[in-house]
Image 1 (cartoon, one colour):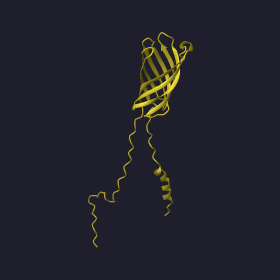
Image 2 (cartoon, rainbow, N blue to C red):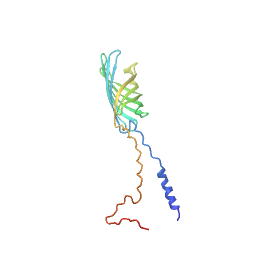
Image 3 (cartoon, rainbow, N blue to C red):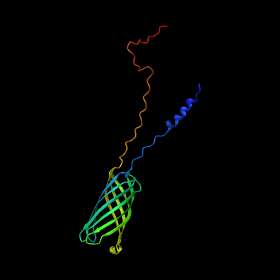
Image 4 (cartoon, rainbow, N blue to C red):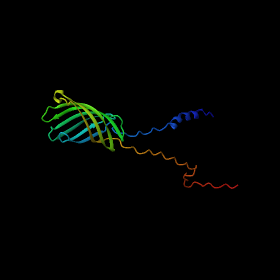
Length: 208
């Protein structure tokens, strides 16, 4: 009897039997389709005490790429109230639940009470420190250029450093640990579990 068919079957089956299983990728934040809702609270003192309240919302159209909109109101004693409406585009360079650096470009409008409004263009970067799976502390530093120049005068460049709290929705949860499959049960001896039909004669020892 030729052994060639048996060898062919073994060769064809060997890649499937020896193929390594794909490892499950660890989920990361800022996935496509996730959302970010942020809250900001600031306080400053100098020429006058000022408070800042703000909120923002963003949507990740691609992993790590988030367009969004921020609204902030700064008010205080002996100074005009400034309401800023600033769309932004943020790119998270490294997506991690421990520490995530990002770059950000932003532009929009400052509405100043009692004065002429200003246009704003700028950018910078920051870090996200995750406190829980869906909440993170955001630190960012930005540099802005104000327009028109004849209105802002000698202070047409300004910087902003602040903290905010971001809430993230839609981030993938941790996957459960992979449990290896249980080994197959040992095969029972032939005929040990075969049911005996009713009326079937039992095997009797044959005398010699």
